[in-house]
Image (cartoon, rainbow, N blue to C red; front, side, top):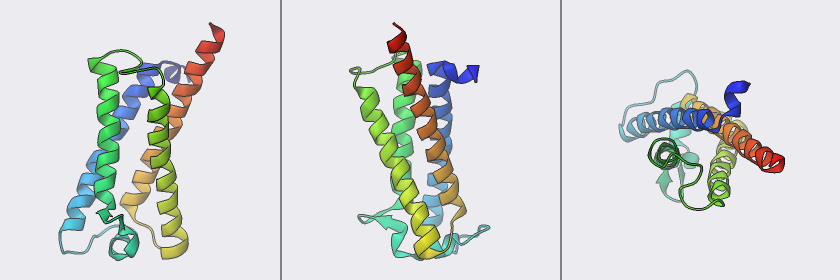
Length: 153
């Protein structure tokens, strides 16, 4: 648990998860672009062909690429370029938390759609949901640690 007490360690884990999420969504975007069926352990092809495979006319893998890329770029800037807690202002942590929370809630919504409406799951989607959940939990821990440090000072 001591590993998670350092903000930089959490940021580094989020960068790694962001990279994995981006690669996963790039693979899924490629699979969506080819006419052949998607082969996986569950029902990826059924999910791909459903009306829920896009949001506001944008294919979900592309939204995932955007989401994970923004997270990865932001935390790379924090870790390696600016080497400080904030790039802009101290309130940005809440903007980042809001962005991550929106991604997390959207992921829960999509998993609900798979479970209840489609009654079919996609391996790639479940892995992405897991990654978003871990990012959400890690960033929540980071914020709680920052609030705890502020109270101690």
